[in-house]
Image (cartoon, rainbow, N blue to C red; front, side, top):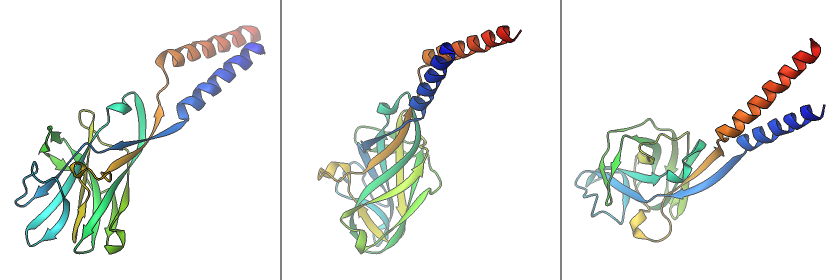
Length: 201
């Protein structure tokens, strides 16, 4: 009975530890605006989204997810600071797919995934953070790219402007149990089951 109680307690503790969620905030370390006539390396003051007389634009925000190695990520929320509007619009957030960044800016984007969440950008949302709930992230080489695209003419805070309002992720994750711990627990439970069978026999 005592062995049974100990093993049951160990199993409960391990399962609770594995299931317990934690939250971490990761700030964007790179971003870029892509569109008509834009030099990504020089454009450090604005992250434009939408269309005006100069052309049509969308913006990308890059994150290093190295701190999440070995963790099971369940959801991410993306937040960006709305600086300016000259035309209300629905802004959609997606994951960039197969994107490559260098020290200055994005050097290639292969594709943009489907829109996962949308927010209206209006005069009422200027000078505040807007948040898009994106679900499970799609990463490439330990990095995540979030793309904002949409209607109207709106600007979001870039990393290099340095005013403390750069975009960030709120990541919910769970620690993955050590394989050795899981293995030991499995052996213990198997041994308990064998002992019970012998006793019944």
